[in-house]
Amino acid sequence: MASIASTEAAGAAGHLPVHVIAPASGWVPVRLRELWEYRELLYFLIWREVKIRYKQAVLGIVWAVLQPVLTMVIFSVVFGRFAGMPSDGLPYPIFAYCALLPWQLFTFSLTESSNSVVGNQRLITKVYFPRVMLPIAAVGVGLLDFAISLVVLLCLIGFYGGYYGVTVGAGLWSVPIWALLAVLTALGVGFWLSALNVRYRDIRYTVPFLAQLWFFATPVVYPTSIVPEQWRPLFALNPMVGVVDGFRWALLGSPVAPDATVLISIGAVVAILVAGLFYFRRMERTFADVI
Image 1 (cartoon, one colour):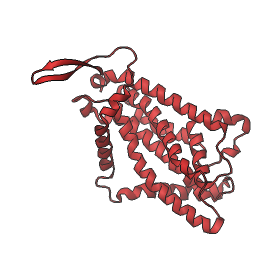
Image 2: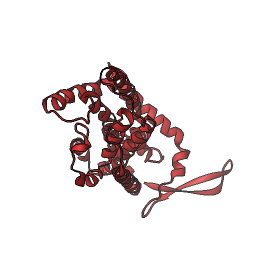
Image 3: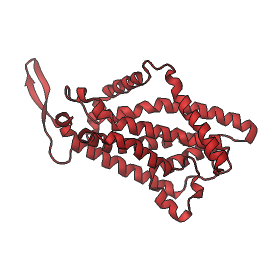
Image 4: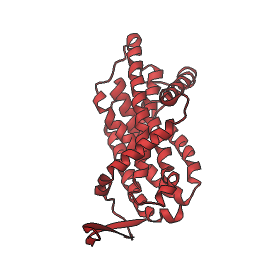
């Protein structure tokens, strides 16, 4: 990967800025201003990924609803009925579905972002643009599915409200914040994995296994309340713990409100994201040569 330095030079047709591409050395800066300059490209990358995702799909966007609903049914039978898993006094189906929303947003974003660079190898070797846009665009696609699934959850809350008195939580306004934390967590890990995947192609085989381990370390099918209190700060080092608990509090009025451990989860998100971004920028100088 090459870094860009801008110089003012006289072009053949007049005084135009000339961009000189030169090899980068050391830790490459993030260049947020450059991302803003290429914002239209980011939009088209996201739109392209959306069209590819649903192209020639028989059910199309229905998959955004079908997958979490079927998973909720299976979890409700296996964990809710057979295993008798507690659900903090909430009906187990919406207890599980509420956690599946951010979890599936996270896993989809993680999977897509980790393969984003290798999947665009032809584009990388032909033209310059900020490579960091590829994982960001891959993450942005999952927000469409999330928005559709969120509408379904609100309908379920209305249905259960008539039978169990479940109402939307007072923290509904905070849902975008928790969704953003889920996306940033996936993006931070995705920066690491997408950069490593360029050199080590077996990384893509470890992502499903990593997601599976991460699932059991996240309170999706069980409540955080069953974790011993002395272990909860360590438990909260998993950023998705704070995200899932935040979703349940915001949408279902869960009795387990976000506490100081959420700050630990947020700190973990920031650390993963910043470290992943700088690692990605450091490695991208070799993408065109290695890929």
